[in-house]
Amino acid sequence: MEKLKELILSEINQTMGCTEVGIIGYAAAAASVELEDEEVLEVLLKVNHGLYKNALSVGIPGTLRAGLLKAVLLGVLIHDPSKKLAVFEGVTDEYLDKLENFEKRVAFQVEYFMSTKLYLELTLKSKSHSVTAIVEDRHDNLTTIKKNGKTIFESKSCVKESGTVESKPFEITLDSILDYVMKCNCSKECSKHPHEILAFAEANLKASEIDLILNTENYYEMVEKISEQVFNSSKNRMIGKKKIIYSIFSSGNLGISTMIPALLLGQAYALDERERLRLISLAALIVVYFKMKMNMITTICGSGHGAGAAAAACVAYVLTQDRECIKNAINMVVASGAGVLCDGAKESCAYKVSSFVRTGLIMGKKASEGQKLVGNNGINKDDVELTIQNLCTLNNDMEIIDKNILAII
Figure (tube, one colour):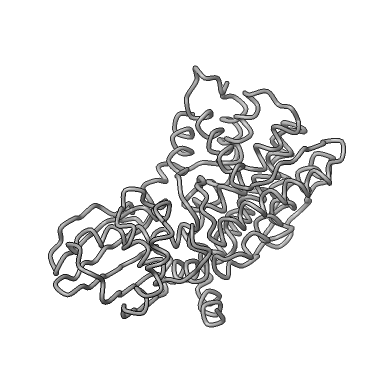
């Protein structure tokens, strides 16, 4: 149980905007500190293809603008890496006024390469200095800073020789998740963890800028309202509004689309605090379970698939507290939307994640009413663990799809 508590907290982080553009601003801020106040004249950016795909068109927080070079130069102007993925909290009107002329004076070169390993190498060149910052494996894992060819900072990679990420310390199963959720007393004396993620969920809900009243008597109207809440919060983030939110597994959209439905369901069904905490823990662990089996940046819409499964699990838990019903609800979500592709982070992501949440809420209700996915149906199997593994195996071996997407965008 303690390991699952630690796992959730280790995968929830404060961020602002898309984490893929955040990593660029963070690296730029870290590198700029070493330029000794000299102006940047040249920028060289090298990233793996997934990071390039997701950072290319997404809004930069606090700007309502997009662009790789803009993200780099704003990080340079902010000049403070201490906020890490929330670096753009430091965006001001003064920096935006400087940005256009700054862009015109800087030579920019970007290169991407095909790799499932998250990697960013950013070089800033001034009159006297060349500084390179490298981030690997996780979005906030700055591993190297080199100044004029000499390494001045070095930290170990968070990937072991086996290729597994150190934040994946043990194997979890759906049964171990359900054991934890159903048995943990979630009291204040038990652990600070559940109360922390409740605060994270409430912060994500505030970012949606919508006030609503939910009525469980009209279930499908409630589904639309929850989906709208997810849509609005995701859209704000993707177009570049200045909103602090909490990500799960380095994805802000995943944090939004996982925590908001769980929080709203708890409110709608007037659950006591203990049950609301259990519900949010269930949602967070379901998406971590999905993402632990996938590459860090996915070819399919990892946020949508994970959030849809979490929403279905939450509804089935609230209405039945039956583990087989919960598993079946997850299986039905995968059957309903398996294979929706990620074609880069941008405003339309809000449509995808809110659509998956809507599907999850509906499938959870249908499962609670006795509907069941029977037999082996394509990638779906009677054993939902096999279904999820099949989905993730397909995702992790789709390089040709990513190549085609990159050619299109």
